[in-house]
Amino acid sequence: MELWRLTVHEAHELLKRREISSLELAKAVLERIGAVESKVKAFLTVTEEVALKMAEEADKRFAKGDTVTPLTGIPVAIKDNMCTKGIRTTCASKILHNFVPPYDATVVAKLKEAGAVFVGKTNMDEFAMGSSNEFSGFYPTRNPWDLERVPGGSSGGSAVAVVTGECLAAVGSDTGGSIRQPAAFCGIVGMKPTYGRVSRYGLIAFASSLDQIGPLTRDVTDCALMLNVIAGHDPMDSTSIPQPVPDHTQALVADVKGMRVGLPKEYFGDGIDPQVAESVRQAAEQLAKAGAELVEVSLPTTDYALAAYYIVAPAEASSNLARYDGVQYGYRAAVADDIVAMYSKTRKEGFGHEVKHRIMLGTYTLSAGYYEAYYLRATKVRTLVRRDFERAFKRCDVLLTPTSPVPPFKLGERTDDPLLMKMSDICTIPVNMAGLPGISVPCGFLDGLPVGLQFIGKVLDEATLLRVAFTYERLSGYRNLLAPL
Image (cartoon, rainbow, N blue to C red; front, side, top):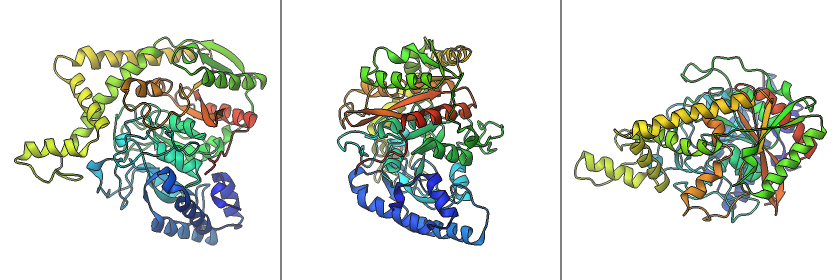
């Protein structure tokens, strides 16, 4: 048995019965990393010694009969924008190439407490700004279903690590689709929880009102298990929602009878690949045959959400990234005549093209004379986007859409066309603008490349999302997909 092929819940059962050890599982995953990493480049840092030590500790917990969780002894990967005490955290940026945090992000601390085994920090678009993983400051990650194509971004490294067996589950962050889009491109499950459901403390910020951490897994059951661990109120995060977290595994019931599933007409028109739209419609028909009621709804501000996002997000990025000045930590220009020149050279040399582009855009929209014309109007559009969803949810329980408008595209195909690249997130961005939960699950293949569908839910209603996703997974049979490497 190749242990790296196991899902989290399958591995947990074997660990509980002592049929395998955490150390055996960790070694199997590390060997898998050694076998495929040179092809896909999913990791920026592989933490072999840390993993083996954590696996030994997990085995001691099992041997002593101590309390264990479904994640105890499970190899997990962490996106490299979450602080890990004593482990390099770069945000895939030269400006943080040597940064070693003195503390753990809350999500990392929760995973540690649950007994998870950390196998490494995954590659990403620099500071999570990108839709393809081509904007990493170090090297691009490749899609294992076709090594000439992108894995999606910005959490592409986490998605690839999951679908290649380089870990059993991973965490990523989602600002405009950065969990769901790579999940769709790689044929796995990826969830963006409600904004505030999971603590952002220790997540290196891109756009603070949009960022949210979530799980990437090979099936919906594992997604629920991961969410149980990482969700919850955190006093260290002022945006964290002080609400109890239900046991999300209780929602894993394959029954959608009477459930109203909304199909927003704007997500099936211009800009959506016809084959992608057809795959998602077929998935909707499967749910209808299982007893769900399909309802056509309209989200008329969808076309404006993308434009508003690319004002709000760069503005917040401009503010958040002002702290990287070469003074206290991170990269510092070697030669400069004075402190102003040092600031300028450090940021010019330390940031990549895409990050600089967004900083300049955000600085401009926040500048005197332009704030009201751009940023203030964008926040008003954001309110309209949220109200669209509220009206739609009066008629349905969940919404069903494509996750990405297109299948995985080729490396380099969109890097010279910023507008076309940004259109890659047109199906996911409105969810972040409204602060809603969303989940992507695989719904088929086009020419051997995965296609994902997205379910969108009401605020704090991840349970309903998991229920409908779990039902569809049972109907389709698409679970625990592993790329043929």
